[in-house]
Length: 284
Image (cartoon, rainbow, N blue to C red; front, side, top):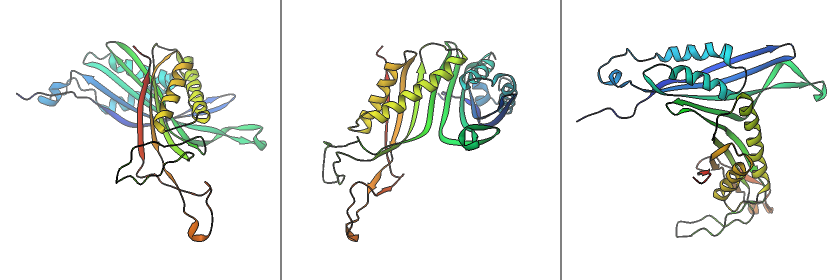
């Protein structure tokens, strides 16, 4: 007996830029959107019956059209509008919309005392993320931040790990730790549009502060400390998932040149790197 297993389909990498024009200046909304549908699509696979298949080109066009009327506030709210629209179709059991927002900031002018109303610079320091799923159980929201590069030049160590004949890594009581964080957090209740923007800023501030202030015995411990700080500070968040690649910076041996290297000169590497991931959640 052969049967079709789990399946989904959709449109990925929908690029969208909207310029919000107003009397006080303009704003650039730069999004990458993905739409994914699950439901009664079995016959499309097994019988070639497309009568229930919403064209992925329609998903793209709907995204552009909805940006005209529904991209006024948070990307979570925009994702909700799209997901609930597709969920209205009887053959769709679950619609998931993933939105990534790429920030553009107004260019400072007049020595930094003003900003340009219509000229922008891309802020590539991180990407804001929202995942919205509309299904039988209602609409669920996950917010997050990706590609957030951070570094600790002190208060980071890694000692006490097991050693065998393949272990060459030296113990470090004070090392440089660099990472590019991806963090996702889920909400335990629905929030209105203003709540999403406020929560994103507040959770990101807590993440940065916890990273800066704690002493790290390992990346694993750092994830626990940061995730716990977010949950303790934000009652609306039920769980936090963190991915923190350990982007190694190796101390350069300057002795052949007759020079001492007292934690000043490093060789950064990106591959291979350690990858540490964990989810911290409220019990129950």
